[in-house]
Length: 435
Image (cartoon, rainbow, N blue to C red; front, side, top):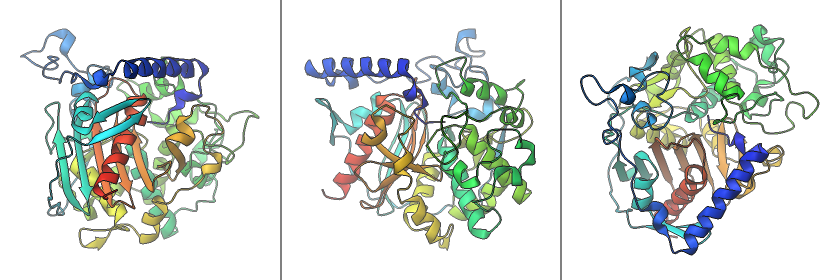
């Protein structure tokens, strides 16, 4: 769940312009004041502290994704909603260390603003941050009482795992990317998805009437999340109720970020493999990656995994996944995914339709394209899996850098989350590459 969907909304663009104006004023006052104070941790906020905790400090299924409760909730998903484990298999793959102090690295954020990496991480609600260079851990930081073993919800980073598994099934011939969705899922014959191809779903090019404005209680995404929580209607019912966009654009004509799209992909994965999504993930990726800890999927009321935003994993295992893709699919002494799939993921596609529906200049100035459930960035040979509230797996091919980040930012999308974090990762990559 991260698509800057609110940016297509005129009111939201006005708000974003106001935010930019405030940032310019801060900068004109000399102010790296934006990064002057670290946010409170879950313990400092008193969340889930005490026996029992005070009523206003209890984190539940109804509030764990909302601030400030998400400071605790995103790292404790298994304690508030049902989950299904993706177990480990065998010893973890090596992550050798060659540590570098990046705390004092200065990053130009534009508009007269700059920040040191260490200051940025503390102020940006970071929970965990790891940088790999040439496959070595060069920098690793933990905040908000998080540990290397903490399984943290990564929101829409989940989509990139789903997309990678679908690419593998397409390569095996189990799924035809050119085939219509209703060929695999006749249950969706009357929905927006029916006559879209699997590849159009992979690239988020589905003509669908959908509002993914995260802060709007009446938006479709809000109803989608409600469907996944205890007492909700469930993912399958929610998906069957989504309809095609009338006249504006057809399938394949424009990029439109919609979180339920990869949940349809997850449904196809379950259908063709005869397995749960967690089971498919274990067999296809996790057991071969040399993961150090279990991952887990958030389940809807019927036990269905959220394949668009429900995966929790540790930051070190997130980095292993990125490193595997950087190494042409080779990791842990074996070919986890094919070289062709890894290179496809790292190659920009679909730039020509990327910004047709979105007026915000994030499209074209920060991000450049989207394909197969992965984002590309402007001006750098880098791709990323992104999730709201500050989740990242970032892969910079030229610099040989992988960065993974867990965060519990109170805002789903903002310049801090989506723009500034990208600039920090670009700057780290340039520095490590000796530029």
